[in-house]
Length: 268
Image 1 (cartoon, rainbow, N blue to C red):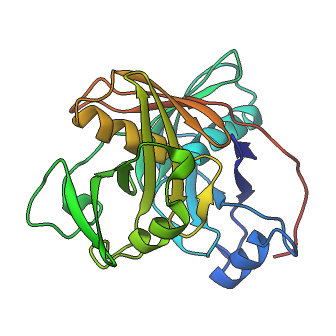
Image 2: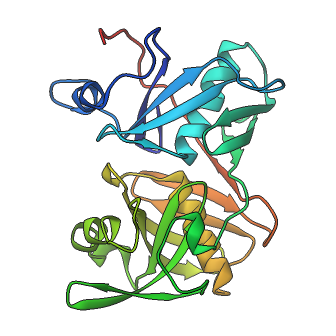
């Protein structure tokens, strides 16, 4: 499946549990495996009132906490499996409960929780919470915003995403020692108060065509800096997502397409 080209394999947990990291890396190889940005493994519900429990693994085999586009794909997949029509379903994950709305127009919305700006939530090493943190990367000092959307995000405002140094700064910030569990890195160009352009270097995957939690993280940081309105169109290389955030203590909502590319079997 994919959400604007951010692509996934979605599979039921095998009897032995999650595949090991080497197997996941083999499957992620686009030349000799299947190819994916993240693997989404489904388990029976762990809590009453939920439709599924899911776990997320990056292309490098590491397990991560959350994935916005992945959650939307799972919602559409599980909704079809349960033969439900448009409506709400609740899913469970290591990052917590996720409410999803499968819409009549085929779009899927998910509530990604309340953005958390506490550095310890990412985690990110800082003396205290701030709107902007100067980060030394090599011989350059970069100003970042930092937020957790169930997973860590560093957000950099750039004048143009087309010219953003994603290949150079993305890996360097992902592995920066102040992010002990690494981080996703977003490069955001503010076009208008209701419109941004975004490129994201994803932790363990590199630059992807879209990143749902990255879109949420960018809008949350932009809102905190007073640059953006409540509803924002986020243009990524793969297409457009919509993010809505009313503000502190409110959940942030992500809306966009979720598509099935193909189905098949693989020997693990």
